[in-house]
Length: 247
Image 1 (cartoon, helix red, strand yellow):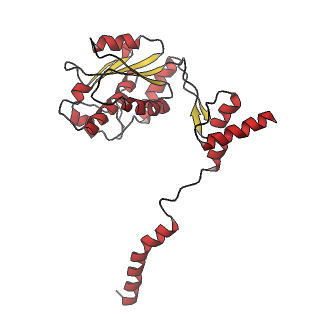
Image 2: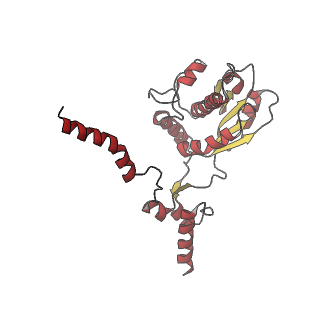
Image 3: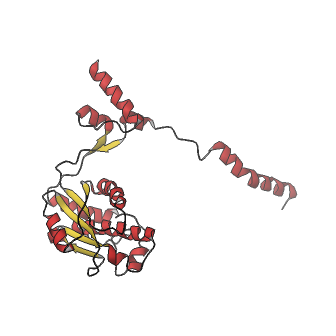
């Protein structure tokens, strides 16, 4: 290679990362978009009195915070309320699940339990309930993080089966046949894909269940049901509309 060309190429190779870093610093904060400033973001209508999924915790191997973190993600995807609650780990897990599922606000009950006699996942669609057995998921004494991943996956799978969807053909989806813990660990997705979600939506439509309405914070304020502002952007929208109403 020509020496001059080689020296020029080497110089570019050495300087390029610095030039890119100078032009686009990775840690520079991005200003809020005009859309976000105008709308205040997207919020979901209140869930009071609306039927949905209930995650009932009757185990102590994984922290309750796992359910608290899952519920908003599930609610966002399923578009129905997802509530969490706790129960005493006493008596039959099956009877506890069946009793909790009889609540008129429950479309799908997912019970987390510790039972040496039950499999990792039990599903009873006709009873509107499923059981995720943490004891079975922890049978090989996995690390805490791996156990939480297994429980999270099974909660998604349990709720989706109860709500009418079965296995998916999509490569990256939680709704795959699982015959062992290694099969469950091999699933890399963190939530269901759109193929089984379509089946869930079809069943909800057959049950005449209305999806939770999502709209902008601005529109919710105008309609009178918006919650108090949760950040500076929503506060700006709130102040602007309240001022306009007062004028």
